Image (cartoon, rainbow, N blue to C red; front, side, top):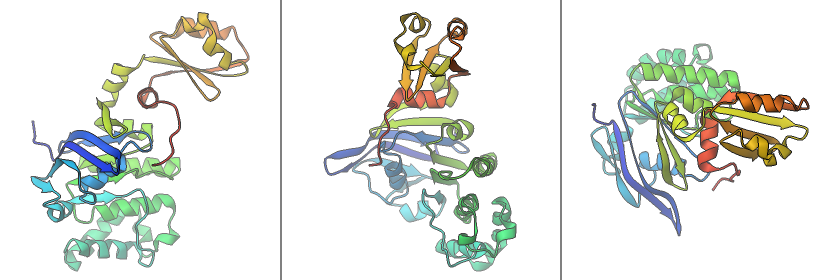
Length: 308
């Protein structure tokens, strides 16, 4: 088995009396996309900041590309690509100029950067926008430009912190297509996301974080099979909430949960439950397989948490 491209061991980070990351360990293999999911305040962004050398761990170690963070931070960052949550493009430069100036930060010669710019813009589907400034681009275009900029130094590992937040479905799908291409080229990706369909589509493995701790790890399919019943029936509409207290219906499910106006029945076989619900024509039902969103909610709870 290939040695990990990136490895974090027993990371911890505290701010005052609050432990934000608590004994976190993980590794990323060459060509792998590792997803990190968890509610707000779970420690995802702090973990990314430690991986980038922007925040020094209070405990633990980080090894990347045969080097150690933060001791070799500059050498490691020279081989990383980063797309942060927030747009950091220079609004005064065109798309091509943003790539040129960013390449200079890595000590690249202008001629080498200029040779790469057309390919990077083509990869980002922005060849026709080379002379446009970021303010003239849509949100999806700006995110793709940020991704192209992160590739200017031909990095071995990409760190992507919620790269598709705020994008419409079409723009997200185009971004996913580009990330899949990078994985096919052998790049490794560390991805944080709030979108469970994104995690399931892109990630070879997932870490589930809560309160700074790893509470689960595995492939998306493994985690779903390990923690959930295979069938889910959602019931909503007139009288739906009363179903949560219906003993006969609850007996047909392994587990029942309520969120908002919807009752979720988790079961090994939904047929008997669907037959019973069919006798209640005012209800609306949805029968589907268990997914990563169910996993996320089971492991971290349905309560909304504010940032911080």
